[in-house]
Image 1 (tube, rainbow, N blue to C red):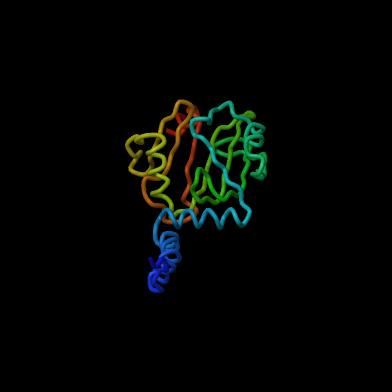
Image 2: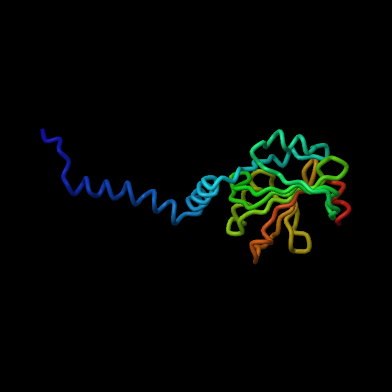
Length: 182
């Protein structure tokens, strides 16, 4: 009984073991997303995995800093449309999606709004993720925004692929703030 593998078989098996994962990483959406996440985390930026259902108007700055100690939020008192205090940080990802930054807006010491800037090329992945996690959105508002009404807030996202990287943002608003913006 000959247990020795033919040389060509070993060569083909070796090539498959090298080319298979490389092909997946370079040519599939999931592979590219995971490669980007690895590189972003390797460069030292933290992740910000937030549960939209856990956001509400009672969340404080201390709650966020306790929950996410690795995220270095820089806070500043300044008046904006979303609140009187803004805390911002560079992040690598949120909820498994490559991202750029997180901005939290506080009014009266509690969370009023949240903006998560994501990488524009992952817009469709984010929309699908929100549909899977939060259900179907309301009809697009004015044809430009997808809206998910939650018990304690509203999640909004552009219905169209952003044209510029700076336009790629997901926004969460308290119900009070969302009602005042309509």
